[in-house]
Image (cartoon, rainbow, N blue to C red; front, side, top):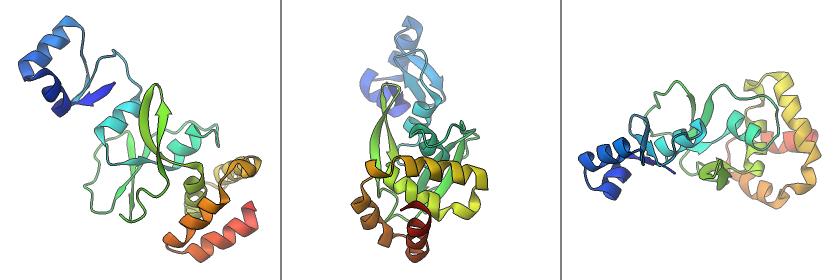
Length: 180
């Protein structure tokens, strides 16, 4: 399990003890401020630990849910609007209103760890919200895959989420025309 330096201090008591654990091979420094008892951790898990208040979204979530076969080049994270900018070359940050940031966020199992990611219903709304920002072929691929799993989705959940977003009428119209 990947943990932050602060959690290492709580667990081992001091920086000296952390260094002793590293020398003994029971703890590994994955990158600055991130440690693990496993020698290798997925980069997605490391990003999740490093930014605990962020939620995986867009390309990262679409790929995780098998809605696209395009492997994302970067990890897409949603954070609150008042959050500092993430200066990590692996991350694309999307600022979200604080009242909708955790709407549809779920703990998801990934590589034996738990990460926070939007559910498929929220991601359908994100797809429609960001339609004009995505390449047309990419959008159509994901939309087509959503049509294949339409009966697995919780449509009531989608209807509950919808009014909480800006431009909900536009999203609702796109849902009716392109999805249902």
